[in-house]
Amino acid sequence: MKTHLENNKRTSGFMTPNDYFDNLSDNIVEKINGEVTTNLIPKASGFVAPEDFFVKNEVRLLTIINHTESKVIHLKHTLYKVSGIAAVILLTIIGSMIYKTAETYNNEFAEMSYLEMHSEEISIYEVGALLDNKEIIELENELIYNNLN
Image (cartoon, rainbow, N blue to C red; front, side):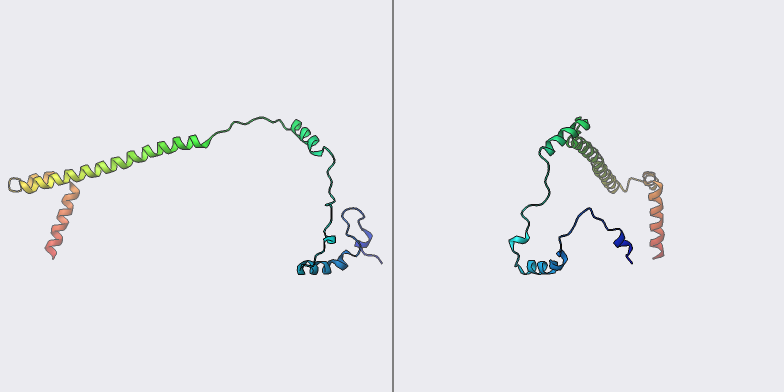
């Protein structure tokens, strides 16, 4: 009784030469050992393209495809513009922060110098008028802490 595979043998497609698998292991061992002879390498690949195949197909493909040129956008110019804008914004922010920090430091230093020079002439109420609520609370907490110690 024949099996399903034996009943449905394919006769078309790729075929192996007769006794191919019988000599395969010997051929592999020869290749590994470096005993390959040139008769094992085929002279031709077996694939042949018809004459003018590529020329005919190129013309046919170009007629099928509508070859239109697309608009190219160069990112280099856009990158320069965006990086320039980012640099200006960054310098504006950092510059204003540095200026405000230096200005604040100079103002505080001037206030401290004035208070030190005229400490006898200034009353407690005038000093209190110069302080805001946050500074007054900090002074109260500091006095309370000093009294506890």
